[in-house]
Image 1: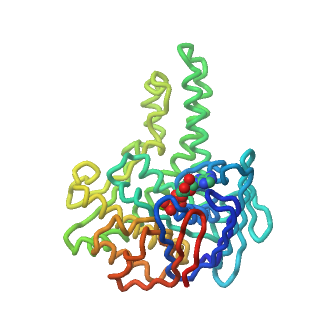
Image 2: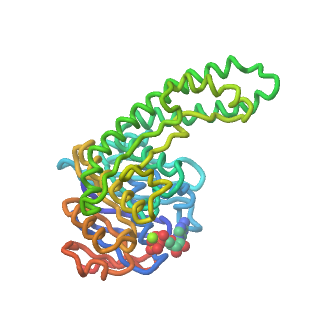
Image 3: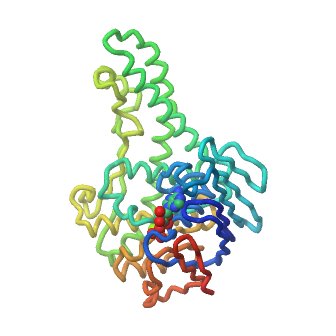
Length: 361
Ligand SMILES: Nc1ncnc2c1ncn2[C@@H]1O[C@H](COP(=O)(O)OP(=O)(O)O)[C@@H](O)[C@H]1O
Ligand SMILES: [Mg+2]
């Protein structure tokens, strides 16, 4: 797919903005805090309805305004789609595809495939398990509506179960209700676990080649799914933990506690890897994501590359730029010098300065 254009109204630091993108590489350069990331964020929201940095709708609306509008024209398989999002300060957002309102965000998912890559992604291995779960959930939610649905239900049930555990107190008269929640938790939880396992298997098929290339054939990588229930069934673990869950008033096992382990040359690099190893593995993971989306959606995603190049050394920059030659990219950076020593060809350059964008072509 490709993004052809973007229109913003009262979005973050933009009052009105209209951009036409090139179908290959688009560079947005400018000083800090000028509005570069805001553009990528708006594109991400147009495609997924959510901010990549988890911002709330009211934070996206320009200060002092009540509503904000994002319009994107995208092309997929020769068809054009107009995506409209109306964000409201007080109230839920309105979404439309070709001017027809849709109710569920997941209706967008067949059309839009995006990969967002920001400097924080390079810390995914160093950071805690919740970031790794966020990665896998964001990816699977985009690729698989059923997963998104299961995940939404699962999260709701964990919440309700935790509320119940808090209400139970010493009386423990609500155990029957707990059984009901547990049944549902198992039902959705097992589907999530199965899908995550499949996903990690697919990642492994792709990442080892990329990681070898990135490390000059020096390192072997292996990604291991670590469900919190270990080798036991979720049902068994819930039963085993029940007394403890009642005592601590919280659900101690389930997909909301899963993790992903990264092994390099037999070492768990979450704990024992050097910073360089962790970041290289993170880059390999991100590049695998692009490939995985390509395969799963049978289409090239659009890559939103936010300030990542300056975080990488020349060798890794080159590898990254080489691997994204054939897909549409929106790249932000502070200066275009980043590209001078690369074979990478830039197709469109935009200068971003305090909420104004100049097309320098
Ligand atoms: N809701 C908002 N209304 C107006 N301005 C905003 C809003 N949210 C963020 N900003 C402004 O956007 C700018 C940051 O934009 P950003 O795209 O993150 O910058 P960068 O160019 O460094 O990527 C800041 O100046 C900030 O004050
Ligand atoms: Mg930025």
